[in-house]
Image 1 (cartoon, rainbow, N blue to C red):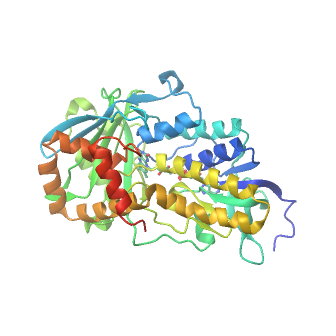
Image 2 (image 1 turned 120 degrees about the vertical axis):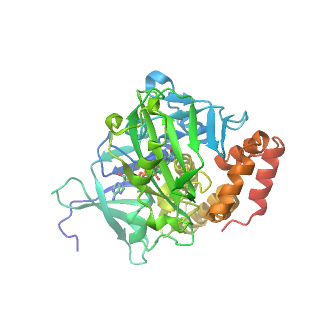
Image 3 (image 1 turned 180 degrees about the vertical axis):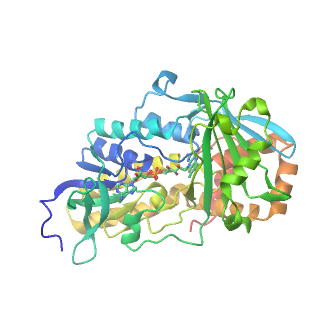
Length: 423
Ligand SMILES: Cc1cc2nc3c(=O)[nH]c(=O)nc-3n(C[C@H](O)[C@H](O)[C@H](O)COP(=O)(O)OP(=O)(O)OC[C@H]3O[C@@H](n4cnc5c(N)ncnc54)[C@H](O)[C@@H]3O)c2cc1C
């Protein structure tokens, strides 16, 4: 089929997609001394539709990669989360923990993704930009041994080969699909839209989250956000969950406009101040594509549906799964025989289940519950006026607890996550 393809370029590991999942995977693999080819279809810097908000979980991963995080480097710090709902406005600082830093960050994805990709490159990964992967190359047993790719528009397709391949190609993950891994429709999915406005609120040092999204007299299951970028603009957007009847019927851009029409004029969230188009994309949650390892292919980040169902955060989980995949692959490739390597690789889905399984099952129940408008109404009315309860809720929603010990809230959340079966 591919007789005219030039000789394949090869590596120990091919990583497809250089978003946070792919760059983190490539970084950790390169640090283990492996030869890594990181294939990215776009050319940096490039846009990615996102809220640009980073919790302490994501900051921890950036620190792991040795990335300088000062403001002159393009990062804007925040102290916590401001929640607005039920007639209450509550500022909750990120918890003080030994396991996570006490601050979050904001950075637009143009700079963020390029910084991560260049960091992987500096660690030794070979980054090829403008290379679109078109499909897997399989051996007679159906195991992936490489990929076919178009190096540039109009150029001939060629192939790359490796001992293992990582799908880090995001929510639609064509590579996973081509390997027979479709999305699971029993798992939650979010849809979110965002844009940017010049605003006097651009140096807000709290991430702001609005729990009540009204569509006429209907309360919708989702939330709106306003994140100061520190560069003269705010990233403003909203996300909804597929657990409600409203999910299919909603015009998201229109809802965003109507929500913003109710904001104080002084904040500047008006058409004249809009600096970017309103763009939307899906958030694949709670392991909505499994198994995370099959026949030589590992899934990381959105490709494996790893967005946190509680809060829609995906970057931290993309980077963490990249680190876990890097660790497992390095151990697998060190085994002298195929059977030994396979045994280690089968441990990757289990390592992910150990990290997030119970917590994501809880998240799916949460998402199911708030799909009922009365639950959402009850929770905002009765939860918001209770700051101690909301501090617990912040830890639960942002998945920020000490893994061992910690305070009573940490122990309750950890126990719930451990007791809830991973599925
Ligand atoms: C509106 C919105 C707001 C969000 N807000 C936040 C937020 O504030 N904080 C947060 O933590 N998360 C947020 N998320 C989720 C977050 O954006 C994702 O979870 C995260 O980007 C996942 O990273 P990833 O590396 O898995 O995938 P992606 O970031 O999608 O990266 C995939 C990469 O693969 C490349 N690629 C795709 N196909 C191919 C191919 N065939 N060949 C080569 N390369 C390919 C793409 O070009 C891309 O660079 C938001 C999502 C949306 C839609």
